[in-house]
Length: 232
Image (cartoon, rainbow, N blue to C red; front, side, top):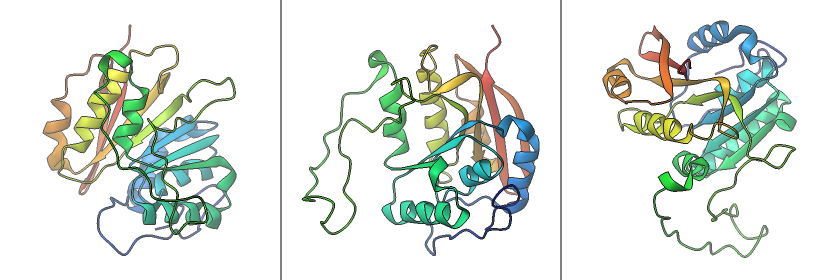
């Protein structure tokens, strides 16, 4: 896996030797960013279920302003950080170890949030303890310079296959979209969902109040679905 083009063109990215991530093939990544074209320039990019960060790093290499990477597996999180170092893009990348669904839940209006789920207290005594310190609060929300939660121009969703996670994420993003002033996705932004074609029926069956499927592209065993806000 490598960076296809841009400032970090040709840099090879580290990838895990274990299963559980959904890497994107270079040809699919090339096609995706050809579609996005100049929309990536100065874009604020959110890479949910980031895996090793290949998509968000490609966005940074092509001129995105910054990218936030959400990944739950601590070993994979470390690979994201290493890949940012390899590409020289650390300053523009924010890596958060955590559950992407909890991240989305934290952005949703209070009226739509589920009751909080109790989580075990961390046994770590500080940064010198063995292993990473876990952030066990409601959820860390990236903030913009004006003190408001960040808004993104592109949200990329690529969870593990066949677990209906992509459909769940889309439902949550649609519920969150009532935040028209400080919502997670900018008004002119878009959501891109990466799935296996067999998962398509479950995604398109999601009844979205705020978003509409505007485009879809298939590349072998990878299907990309593009969502934007309904036109008023």
